[in-house]
Length: 357
Image 1 (cartoon, rainbow, N blue to C red):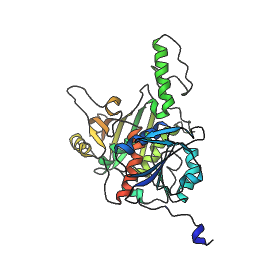
Image 2 (cartoon, rainbow, N blue to C red; image 1 turned 45 degrees about the horizontal axis):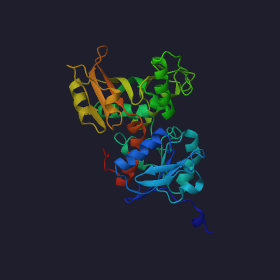
Image 3 (spheres, rainbow, N blue to C red; image 1 turned 180 degrees about the horizontal axis):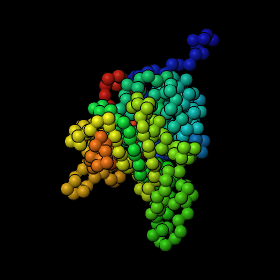
């Protein structure tokens, strides 16, 4: 056997414009299920769907597009002939299987945190830094959900005036912790309403009629891992390595969709009307604000929908260079599954094609 025959297949920079063999790693999870729905909704060019999951789920039946498929346990052989892998099975699974899939010639779009800060792996939000998607070596990282929503608001403004500092507080729904956390919120809410004592088994504390600071591991500087993801990932996506950003992340008793209160300090004053006009035209964003009716974005406005809703844009009274705004976005869709599918669509279209809304 020659060296050419034993060498791994190089991962293409773009994806071929033809029906593709698509593998979903982690197909039984909340994001995996959303990926299935989006591939059908968006009529993604599919030749074959390969559903992959842990050995625990292997052998289960999966209904998709009038097909009865069988979920396969993930293995090296499962990636043979696959064009693109949409991975959402957690960091350890991605670290194990993404390099193997890329070596087999697939492009891996990974939803875990495994490769996000790897300098050799692009971290992509198609509306913000689409060109980065084409500078990959087989693996592209999908950012953290809160980061994706935030950068959609920051990027159109940063294109006009340089950002000096960002302070953000997040209000993150149960769905960010997975389908089991959503079901636990439903169950424990009924328990409280019936006069019982809620005991959480999925989350560290009951979320029923309660909230708590994000439970990701605390770091020596006092910030949790989730908050530092927002800092480091935003810097990488926006190409602003020295951006000053401080985040406080909170888990709230909402089933689905995250919210964020954002304060943005610029190097110079930014007229509110100009900022509003820019965001109204921005890709992936919808403006939702009615000051007369005191009506602004809510999680229910974006649940199951693609756009990030932004509103209550106003001048910061404490700083003439700063603006305040509020946003809500469905973190399972745009914050995870939709962003991954849009990256794949971008790779099919090629550089300069723009984002498919």
